[in-house]
Length: 482
Ligand code: NAD
Image (tube, rainbow, N blue to C red; front, side, top):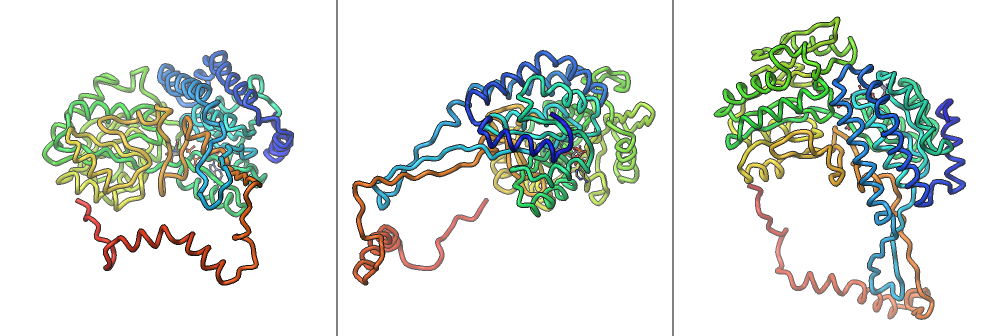
């Protein structure tokens, strides 16, 4: 199904209203369809992403095909258990009664994707949407045109075309999709556009999941295995030429280990992409001239020292793996999301100074902590906020379907992957069934004084007893955070 977002939304809404998407069998069939798509069109999908982004085919296969297959397999395995009615306790005063929670589909989910992982970030939300029993209208990014066209053409051959539609286009297609009033909008993209789209959705009371970006720090403590930290930070930063929402954006390193870390980073760049990364078949390119110019701008006037890289070739859209030490904290390099292969390294006194630095900035999507000292990890967890955390690695939190993936504050609203995606795109609908055998007249009017006293005493007694047992005094004393 294609056409305008409004047409697609109307058709999907009609199919949803017929109850087509609710049965478990339909949901599992859609997940089967997605799996078939990934197997039969895997090659074509990889070629499309390579054509759009100039990435290494192996990297694309891992991040765009294999990881979506793993997600679909997890959903198929868990779904029958996750969507069963959940019996919950009913308070004694309501007895005789029983209560349960039913997971209901929301309706039609609008899914807007970015260009940087154009298959994964469209199909994983789609898998969650259909697993939860929803219809879906997808809007791929216009900046990955080959992938967008392929999905628009092929998806309907594998999934129920009356309930899943793709509408291609740019910002105006997103706006039309929001205006068509989906029951939920699942948006992945930049914080700036997320704010605009979120505001438009809020004006129409369309609930949203916003998967955004930001500056994700890597903290290298003095207890770290610096060689391993350097390799894992460089790998996470340079995957897809730094164009990943959870790429380590910058490094905060304990001053005592800064020299070693710089050596490790330079060594890691050579190990991963050889002496001339321009010639490496595994090193990606920047998506557009606009982004090459933006990155070249970040390399101008940062006030730091380039220890490796720095070259930009606009013709081939190449930006070298680049490490910049001691940049000016006020420079755009340390203010804006970099979204490219440039890694600023900032020295700090210790992990506490790193935490203070992170707290002064918008909440990041990821926090990467390198160190062998568990107490340092716990202190950073207690004194900062981030969407997710990796200890002694980067990027891998995205690859586990058991972990909720999403941001907090400026880096997003809501999380998904595996069961968390199904929960996010379901309504938890409570049902209470009251037996008829015992129907005490106490709760019904009229309320003479004796009834009021009896009722309030019965309902308030447990709290009154608990308060009476506690020592009198002011606010409770709480331990001060360390
Ligand atoms: P983007 O915000 O420019 O575009 C995302 C989508 O919004 C695209 O489909 C685009 O067509 C649409 N869009 C763009 N401008 C719009 C407007 N004015 N009104 C309505 N719709 C508009 O993001 P991008 O450049 O495609 O992706 C890069 C950004 O996405 C980075 O900030 C990155 O951190 C973030 N990102 C986040 C995640 C995540 O999972 N949290 C994943 C990938 C990328």
